[in-house]
Length: 364
Image (cartoon, one colour):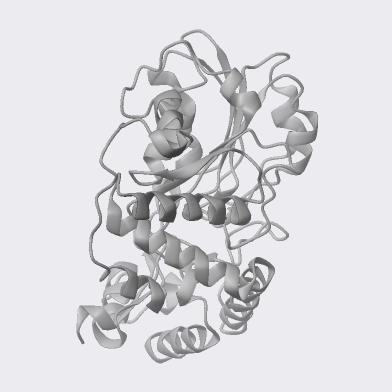
């Protein structure tokens, strides 16, 4: 089977929309060409429509989601300032690492992997933090953390959210939920290959920027001059032209389908997958009521694996025989959990049916 025929159902990149693949074939323009600037402006407008925000500083950062994480942190946290961070998986841990490297005082709010973090615990963790940060959709566990109560009760704190696996896949309302800074990735529910990190920043957060970001490349005050500079844009860096083409196309597919319809499609496929796995005797890992439809975590039935074949062997057999990629567990659940993505163009009922049939042939 050719690599182009792979069905990507892991936690990483999903299969891109056909319109996105076509966009990569467009002739290159200069990054300051007026035609490209117009397309970038339209891409930013489309991002606002998907983030559900009016934030002027909304744009695709020229790097992947982890750079979006670092950019949002390093522009609002100075050494000694307090940040409350929710940790119930790998990416909450990564937030702590980024904030610690900036010299911030990190106040952790931990929950067991597979469990959601109670919003009130986040609000009660410190009386006056500069920032409250949490992962909306924890990619390492398949858990959704709720945002609305935190945004409503944040007080003077800035509310920073990781939306890498949630944007366009489940409901997310940046402005209505009081989110001040958010970042995402292109490779999940947006249905575009990895390479950009959509970022949105409120005016309130801009007013809370540090005097001088420790990162030149990720300095949002400099990038803001480029993004919002009108006809006399300041030069900051050379934008990845083809990736912006692709993001423009992927967002166009979502908006043409309708954001609510795209989310409903993700929800229907996730429900079909999770029901099918349970009917086969699998135990779902993520807390009931907080399970992501776009990323399903399931306990590996170690007693049902083919003789002499470990869980990694089953995943390799899925890839080699059926062309289906699923992900293994991370951290404390490595070797115990599989993570199955159903995102972007991959979120189709036929793909769920194919995976369930392949697992049945291997395990039953």
